[in-house]
Amino acid sequence: MKSSESCCPEKTANPLLTRRTWLSRVLKALIGWGLFRVSLQVDSALAASPLITPVVRRPTIGETFSNEVMKFVAGFLFFHHAGDAEISLVPMEHKGKFQATLTGRTRGIIGFLTRYRKDTHISELIENEDHTRFICTRLIRDTKIGHHHTTKVFEMDYVNRRLTVTRLKKNRKSVHVKPIPKGVYYDDPLTAFYNFRFGSYGPIKFGKTYRIRTIPGKKLNTITLKVASRAKTIKEAKHLPIRGKATYLVYSLIRIS
Image (cartoon, rainbow, N blue to C red; front, side, top):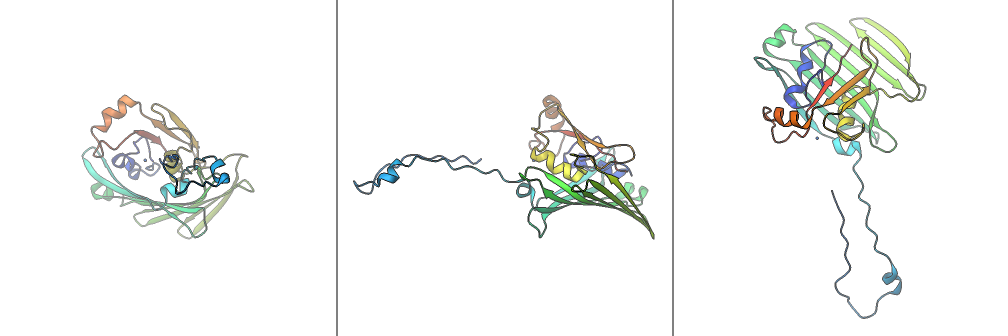
């Protein structure tokens, strides 16, 4: 997920190039009557039992994406490999908890101009009660630009409705506490990445726009996802290296402050 780009691999990594931007895919049971009997005597209780179609359980969001690894290459204009990134999701020791990690760095000439910037985002996630979406409880955002190193930790306490932001730079540390409005959940870009794909924000439809509440920053409180029309998706997919595999083309706007 990233700034004004597609969720497809080559598009997703454009946010690596700026400081504020980051960034960003049935089982049916069939039961029939028995065709023959072993003997003429049939258990009356068994004969009277109705056929019950087994319920097919949909995998949870954690089961769907657990241990998934995705790699992206960033390119624009004449720079075909300006940077790369990797997203992964692994289960933690406690059942129902997961860790999503996004790492990315600039390469080549762009890497030289951006002092080989490297970003690491680690989101600690839990599933909601019906296991249909992830909720981020802790986000660690680490940025290295040349010799400068900054770490921000966001901790969401939804019981006490409190957001704690800790910033570490060199030997300086600052802590700020903000209230979380009742009923609100903050989805960072990584959380939104999985929730959107799972359909947690509703069915994915051509031409639809999704606005997702995210951790409040200086200029943006929402992540905007725009699904291209069917016609545009078909047209643009022809120019993608993964053509034939892309069902939707999604543009995202995410600013990281």
